Image 1 (cartoon, rainbow, N blue to C red):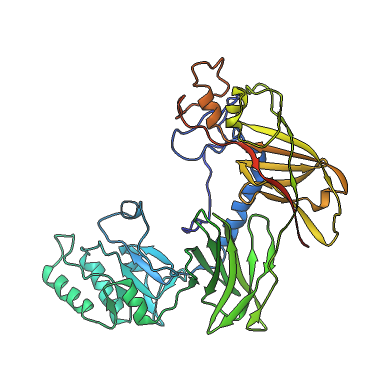
Image 2: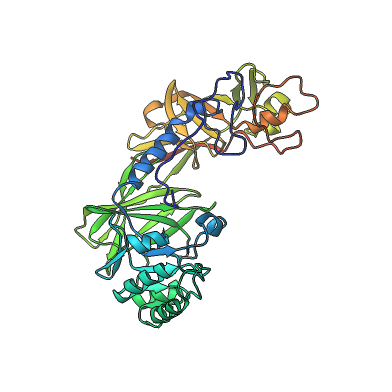
Length: 458
């Protein structure tokens, strides 16, 4: 989604005629095995809802990019950018354009390069690797340059076509790249000359973004693609609207503190590792500064001691095991637990006292491998499918003893590896494609904790 994808097509999901345990039929190493045979299939709905909400929001309005990136006429996008995207300065977005788009669709209007769809760009960047451009494309670049287009990139040396006139090509290339107020060798130089401020600016942190222009405001998708938490001041090239944080994982909308100065709006933004939020500017702003208290979580008590863990039948694991301390299934002395793949249920009764009505109560599971559904006193409190693995249990607890059940599902590799062991008594899982062998490393599995009760303001 950070790369612009806003619709997902899931293939092969219907074709699973085999009812035996295991991943079943797949397409080898191609694509995601997303079928009813997934160990976490019964817990998939929240993730699917997350994709649906995100896709819907990312389809709203019009995509905003300052840079149209021309990748040439004698290569393809995959070959050029499979390992890394174009080198764009941080804070700016781009769109790929090809020669046909340049020749037939793009035109200049009010100092912007615009398309019939409404997309508009402040400059056209030519990939530094492009050295050959056909004469018809160069003619169009010349016309657009005369109309005010800003071009960033090296002057082409020749045409890839033997049919093009060499003399006309050289004359046009010299003419276009002699317009020093419109042609620059690098994107950075062009941006500096235009005094074009970043669309999104962060304080020393690298965040990916997608900007959509709405009829009544702006929508930004902000993604932390790193494996560490980020706490940064993020500045947006928009003003006059009050920002809100829209979360696609739980469908919440919350206002956020902001400061609007000089045509920009800055907000403090905290993102956990691999997290993403939408920052939406729609509501009118009546002030240049607005502050909301940050949400704080206060530890109430740790949930320790033994857990009763129940495993489903005919998967090779014992029906119940007691874990005195939480640990990965792969560290268990029982091979049935060590190689288990599927969903196991952790059960425990805990005492909760001094419940405060003005606060919310949350169950923090710590680390989970890989997905968990929490039930409190027989009521489902939700599925935790990503870090932080945390669910709100306010509406389901009462003072005194409370029954906690946590169903945790891992992935299929450990069972497939276990079936390859020399002393394996039988094969528990069937896979049309199995890339694992007896020496493949096992994946951490189960509820790893630490499990805690937290409170937060309502």
